[in-house]
Length: 305
Image 1: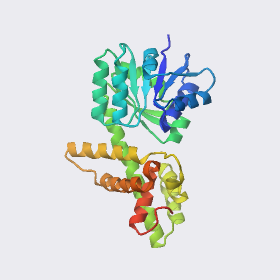
Image 2: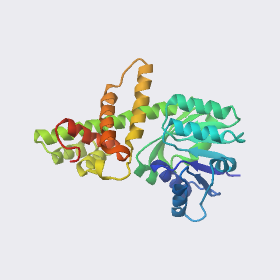
Image 3: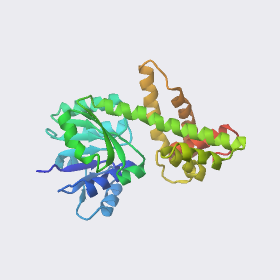
Image 4: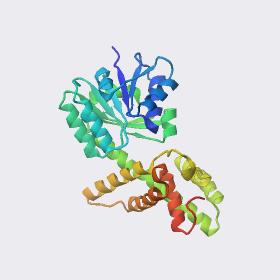
């Protein structure tokens, strides 16, 4: 008998991942979806193919009916609270799959609490922007017992993602450790682009000329982010693609891991100082790409280009 899947957490990434689970996951039972703000769940349910999903009225209801429970929440506190509530019920034999970006210590703690109740956990953070979640082009990183990872893999490459990084039989926290370190590459990319575009404008090279170089040398994410900076997307959108609060959470985790390991991530320290300026200027609308505005301000330019 095919497992009953549940999805908990409908942020920018979660909505796209749900869509692909429903459309490409070969499910023979409707996906049960739950979000703390129920309107997000009902709105998504209305957009998905008829009969392919249902909305749970509570977290407890969703977990009680599920065999494989996917979670994708914004920060450590949110996933800790969710799992603490979930395991109060009978969860023996269930499989929890956490796609949240959190500190590896949090991941390992969650795995222990879940296993203590007779259930299992796979960590499955993903790399990619919301547009990649929507199109099923994420990279899924899986860690946990091999038999549990095997049960999750059918929903990753070819459904929610384009590729898997498989850490079977390694601690669940290895997946989120990679995710945190990997996200510093994105942070540093935006910092480099922001500094480069600011210098291109101030020195007289021109942003268009720099963008032509980026397109030629660094197609893909660099070019996409360069376009966002030039077009003003970093301050114009109402809902951020990569919220500044979440970016700073990831930066704090990375700096904490570096300190605990006896090293430093000085690039991340610089980028985080710029993210603080984005928070101050834009509040919750701030996006990681807003680093460009912060670098511009330091150079005597307006935040908005």
